[in-house]
Length: 237
Image 1: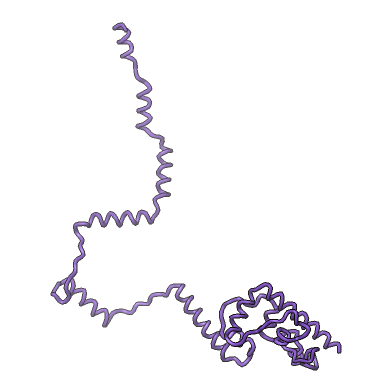
Image 2 (image 1 turned 45 degrees about the horizontal axis):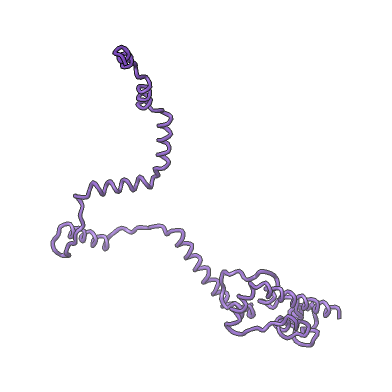
């Protein structure tokens, strides 16, 4: 390369490096605004609180310490704290702090359940239902009308309808007393669907378990539909 050519090349103005440098020094203001907005979204209040706490702990690392102080040793700070504690225990101001919602809900539920159980145990009606359900609870057991027939002995049974003068005789067509247990366990017309009923505390567990059994509910339905037809036949006699 000749001297003239070298001088010509060296005197060229490097326009593209200056352009890149200028663009880097003056960034896009919209890009800056976008970054600031994104940072504001990510920086939640909880994070800011944590950062302030960490800063305070860091700044006070040489100013705060935790040491054990012997009681009744004449330490001014400890004695002053004991002094105000004794004053607060004797003549402190009463403070009324509202109970949380969860506590109020629990207390109300316990009170209502106790009242319900007391009423249930002291009532003079519902003897059969009490034998099956000796205490009240919030479990949903009544899924259809046939379960009500089972629990109460109120339904299409001659013994029940005779109480209201709908039938003249409380006996079934087979000659036995026509209550709910008769059709569940011994009636000749429902023998294909008979059940073995337990007694005592086992009856409560048995009933709760079977009331959620689909096959058991279908069997109840078949038994009580037969008892209904028997009552209709008795009315026509």
